[in-house]
Length: 472
Image (cartoon, rainbow, N blue to C red; front, side, top):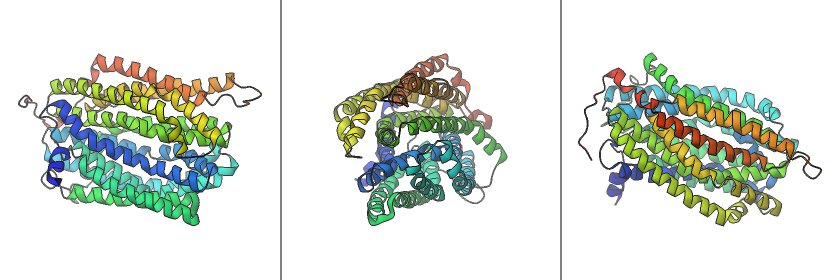
């Protein structure tokens, strides 16, 4: 049985076979893994919300935008490495693949050390910058500082898992993540219920993440039939570092702007009070699960496009895009229906406060249709990134976040101020997000159809062959 699962979900050469089957085989374990990873922060929120209360729930939520801002180094490294690994794997260039992986591991270690040192120093000033309410300030700082201390586990899991997926292996990262996720749930309940509070949730998370990272590194080092991981390949190579930065910088900058914008929006959220912060925290946790299929199909399309661009099979890229779009839209439509039906039940998992639940359900209904739009954005952006064009998705993301979402949120809040709502309507937080998602899908579609991404492959620089494979 295990052998059959490994054959179906293991390392895949996505340059052969039916594109839709490649995507299904790759996406199913990846989706389960993404959902499991989302459980890390969600379990933290559920446990602290149930055992400590809405104030602690708000503290965990307030720390999120700042942590994401500091993680931009990892986002950039992971994106650049994923694109290069998938293209070199598709082009069957073992030496370049090995050097890329080794270089990535070294950069990950260096970036982890930087964040472990700089993160705690930035926590206080950034919490103050986003006007964190005094009643949650100390708890939010404690949670964030502990997460920073253990950031190496998060970094190595995500980056090494991305490398494995770039080579078509989405099964083993899933297995390791499920093990760590189960451990995280047990430790969360144990630490928080024993009186450690928000800090206990943070310690549970970093311990589980460290274990998943160690398992992924073990798996990578055993893939000797595909690549070599040793001290020689782990030396920093100037040319590869430049290529990694060139491909990963746009994604890193995008995430940096996202996180900076999130801090600005968090400041607006904080102005509505602790209850609305708690609502926003819960809604965004549910949103994380609802968005997972979109992110999954986007990642699958990046790997699929990267391998086939590396192999010179643009015909398969086009067919795979059509297949991926059908699957993505159908999945998103089903999710929207589930959110509309079970929204209240989802909210009650986090809190028993009726006002928080009622407002949260309304926010989920506002966002629901946006998940269909995000399916389009993620799939088409994934194709462009896989082909080597990371700049276009970056600019689209910057425009929709900075130029569209943030101004609309503040404008709506300003014009809806009243005696009953002195800070304005909390709806502004999510209506602005919905508008940004819909416009982002429209803009992404236009740039995808322009087709400039088709000439961005990197493997040709190292003599990649472009002879067509046997047709599926």
